[in-house]
Length: 134
Image (tube, rainbow, N blue to C red):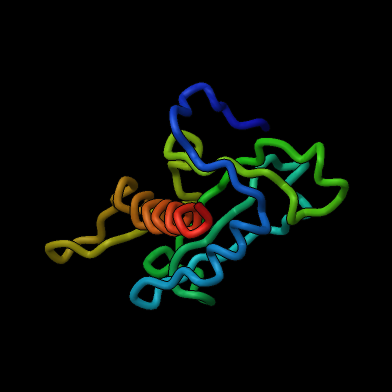
């Protein structure tokens, strides 16, 4: 199902190779980012899933998965590293499953915190990458 881009005001359009390179070096307090879906499936599903958390941990206390939509792949010629993705708060706002947090002895959810802990480091890393190229 194609993503709805009608709410996009300012986002990052990035090819999969650049996103991979950016995610590979992103590490904040031991938390990592990585592709958790098969890029070969992206043309059919319309998104790539990016995980954020502790590599190898699949519970919602340690790892969250977000879908990043594919904008286009017409020019990829079968090369997944040339897939074009849109990273924007309006298109990548909900984790596949919400994370859990402990607060006052209760387990709570905070979808906004889930998203910003995922998105803001990627945004900063992509901006830094642009600044070093300019």
